[in-house]
Image (cartoon, rainbow, N blue to C red; front, side, top):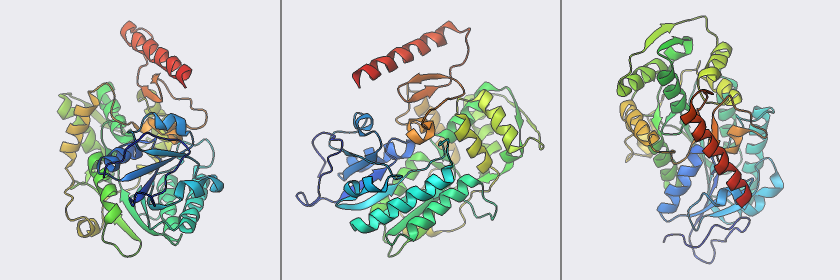
Length: 377
């Protein structure tokens, strides 16, 4: 039965009266979480979201989705959010934090796992990161540590590990798109040759939603990815080909990850903190090494890299993608100072030139919209 009613911040409904299971989504303000909420709601699940600013999130959600105030870093705020929950999706990370994101990730996972166990949650579904190297980047190491903590919580946990996600509004896609479309000559560092196994956002959402009833007995790590193992250079070349762009690519092996992140910040609209941490992770190979996804989710056929890029490009041509990576509060930090661009609500477009009247008109309209939204709140 479809959920009905209106979003009600700080007022979790019990599933006792209706008999419908309650599904909690953390990170619902983010790129993946926002799309998952709409998919679960569309399938008739009774969805509840955990948010630090419930009033802000409630306005962006479908009618009938409950929003509860809380923060995984505040253990005392989790009891109400998890009351009566059957399955909880853990889609939180602190990569955009100005503080020690690894410590915050660790503390948040411990708080959430403990609270979920106390509330009698049947299953936790967590989206982590691929990577088997012993020298994982701090970002990937933290994502996998969070998975271990949730596994050890005593609640059955399905940990889906993915590489870069391709979709309109995703951080990885926007990076590739900005680099290829802004630079006729690409000076590329070593990491562009590293193998990855990209997955379309539509397939990520399908795997997450299917995890609700996946036939697993205990906790599992399931590696997910599209059918293609490619390099970041392959992705850039494919995007250029689809756009009909000719690009000269010059490899520079001595360009370090740190220098790459500074260079990236000058030519793309990504934020400095997130961009540097992401670039550091690109040195690790992130490919699927197990066939377990095929066994657990036999009905899911992930789309290939070309199809994923084509769909992302088609959807990005709309005024805004359905959700964007920068929607997440964790991507903004407590006092975000991005490299450039214009705001529209919590979103940012890569508008930089001070000499382009048309672009400045867009920026002025975005600023006016933001002021109106602030007054409305």
